Length: 344
Image 1 (cartoon, rainbow, N blue to C red):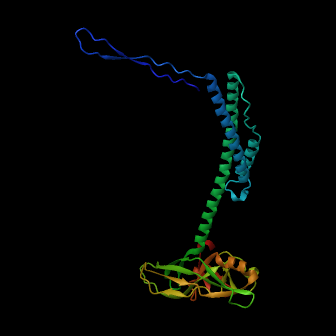
Image 2 (cartoon, rainbow, N blue to C red):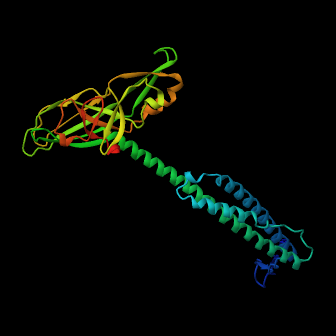
């Protein structure tokens, strides 16, 4: 737009002295400013250029959205919280690819035609922009579904891990004294030492602790103390089928016939003294230091197996009332009196 900038005309007039006066008084007269002129053709051209830029930008954004959507569409349905969203995304990609790109024509010479060209550019830009928005929304929905699945899986894994580490049980001895016992284990720590063990093997040592708490729930009675209690980590699947017979495990039957496997050595024994009514005792007990010389070609599977117990069981050298038993071992010969939440 071309504007002619015109300054107001200011005229300074000095009046003649009146009779009997010795001075003159200046008088300022301002002429009205002229109205700027507008170049209508330039306005039309500028509007066309703006619409052309918007058209080109819309095409670029749609192309980028299609590329992004195609990458996201490679997501596997199993990684999504809502797999049907993947079908909607693929359909949105096909629709977007079918959209006719916005095309910038050669600008006409007369204003009327240029204005019509500008209007068409606006319409085409809106069509491309809408396709981009629809496709981006479908892409975002799939990405959000993947994120939701990851969060759900992480929460489930955390809950499973917590359930494997924690447990509680109610106990009754042969005289009718009652107790509750609860516990929580640490992570299983594994170390490797290839310098130990016979040639072709690596020595694997493990360690873990279990923190426990017992409460006397016998009404109004001092409950006698106990000794010879211990915990054993439980694993699923016979380890001999995973990495040979280098590790000897016992088979445990828990609950309604569920089979697990545990090492011949559990934690050190622990116990507690006499407890007043509602009295408590607590402590931490360590898994007995044990090692396994694992063949090198079976080391990876052994490490994976040993690092993640399915849970822990509580047992005792001296049995409680048989009604407290919740399982038994085929080689430890001691009944199981409590299991982790994950094994219930």
